[in-house]
Image (tube, rainbow, N blue to C red; front, side, top):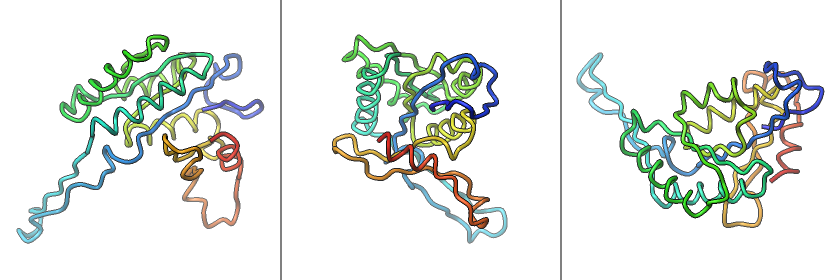
Length: 199
């Protein structure tokens, strides 16, 4: 989230504090893996059951976390904040936490913290100057990146990209801005232009 001069933000401290952080989103597994299904609909009204399963792999967690730590090393504020919900999701998010601790040991020059997603949402609003690189699962980063973009002035301003960490170029630059406005034949290309300029 890069706060641009002249763009109004709902954060009062955006006027006199430099705010600039990156949300790194694991985008190939996690809560959006598409595992689960709807069953037992034949039982009649009220009998159907839906199961939605999150998929966390050690390899996937480590890949995105190393990307986040490498990115943090390039920034003035060398810090990675891991977003978790291991107090309630005792399998996938505990694996996430364990991998974060292990990967962090390889980056002694980078400060770290592990924050519950609820508290991180509050931190985006109350103490954003303490953020540099935020790494989160698919669902958590999806929500937090939209929150950060809104705090920076608009979802249409934030740069966004789907990156393949091992590749030299992005898979695609992307930013979902305002689906309710799609029928108005208007575009605000700032986010797209910034995405292409800052892969």
